[in-house]
Length: 454
Picture 1 (cartoon, rainbow, N blue to C red):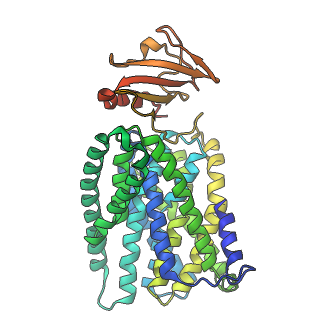
Picture 2: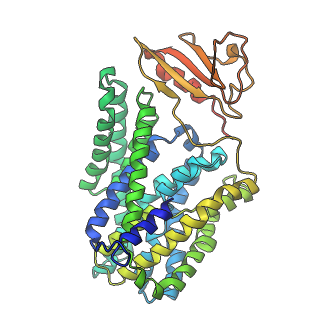
Picture 3: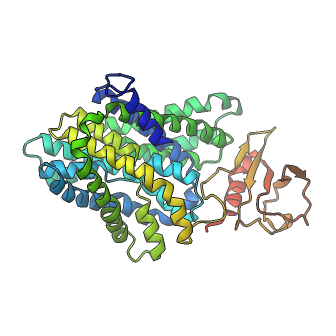
């Protein structure tokens, strides 16, 4: 679908029948940044901390060391394949060095990868975009400024990330505290509030010299895992917003691409893409998962799952807007990387997972359990029973619910079943649990513990 929108942008462009002359890298950069904020915010909102927590270490390694290793290997190859200086070649490596949050989140929604792998890919894609952005901006400074070197680059990247993390953590605490205390009458305005919080989470650390993108993901993760009647509606609202952002980014890339200029870089760009997929990503994956308990099939799947998409497009507009000498070459090379990754890697991910035995029976993508808001001082929690979840095969009386809550109804095959203590539960059942509003957080912790980790 995203490849189709890329093609649409090319058809609408000045080299296509649409004839739209769009050559404004600054506007494209602004569109890209806003779009990436929307994508990362939605990704954080719909991520389960329970799934991410066990894989924080490998995710952090892949998001930092993995990006640097990938950028280095690609940069070495770019130096040999293109007429670029060493800093320009490394800049191209940084632009395509991170996996793409938009591509990964979209793929996880239509796949059923095992929860451990799905959680790792989700966390990595949310965390490595800020590193790639900081590295790209630092390398642009290296290319365009005299006297700027590796120590300056390292200091700038580390400082940007630390400020972004610190400011994001502070905003996350405040946002989680505020969400728990929102009056029920504010429900229609919560999407507006959410957009405002996302804007503050990005803008404040940027003003202070930090990574707004890292802050956005941290705050969204906190908001999405805070018990609230609005979580499901927020996830739906921001899901649509994020998909609209993806469309805008791919159409923008298509408008900025001039097909008449692609012929000169097609062969080296495709070779570079092959190096990225077959060498750089596997090397980075192997290094970052050493002695962390990952099997060979898991490493193979992680190596193949380095999807590229919206982020390289955005970073390429950064290079264009700064007027780097080799910006056209870098942008055109990114076009081929994104095209091949979106057209080949994404569609083959699920078949590869099945062949490696890493596909589960149900989709691993996280859905918040909360469905319905306050009802006279009470809340109703919805839980869909997946294969391997604790309730599957158990009786109602064995669920371990607190005394202040009860299972109100079981929905099975479109039929409502009034539950009794001896009622057996099955995979595919939807459980509706009534609880006091004051005990919502405790009940949610119990319900979240029912999720299978397979």
